[in-house]
Length: 239
Image 1 (cartoon, one colour):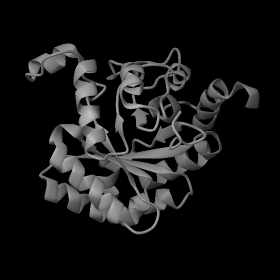
Image 2 (tube, helix red, strand yellow; image 1 turned 180 degrees about the horizontal axis):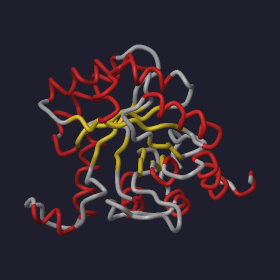
Image 3 (tube, helix red, strand yellow; image 1 turned 180 degrees about the vertical axis):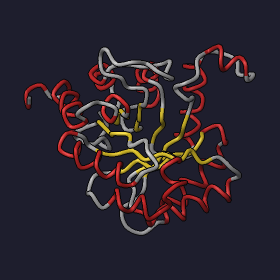
């Protein structure tokens, strides 16, 4: 894993618009995860104050907003997010080099701990047939590599990618480029809307820095127990 990776790579996705529910989940899993993830539904419903309530718990927060607009607008978005204290946010790499460069430069201007900027390559809900339907040629892996290289050249800290792209991205882009991987499912979990998935142990072994895991934890009868089971799979000596 790269030096930027947290000791515990699991970020629990708090996929709800209810701040109280998010806080309940977060407090339950806090001993067993390395961070938390909030999405655009949460942000749209609760705004900056909702994000601050989760940040106040003391775990790193990945604010998953997937910004995509002209360079100046995205830079302004990053400027507005920087004071919230989140560890990471993301933008669509398909927005192009200039947009990514503007976001990276804006993040570096912020005072205090710098928020990392990640590029979104190909959503894990998409497979090759989906890409072909929107006019993209080649495999998902080829498109991911192309966008990830562009993101690195633009100065981003890493990318969000599917689990099957971990190995080729590591080989092409080195150990210091952060790889954040959603679509992680413990063995036996339902796939639902994710088409490119992998278990936590497999993804970490390949070199993923952050493993985003949501419903297998939060939809469990006992979220704390589910988070602990994943932790113990990744760190068996601590079990």
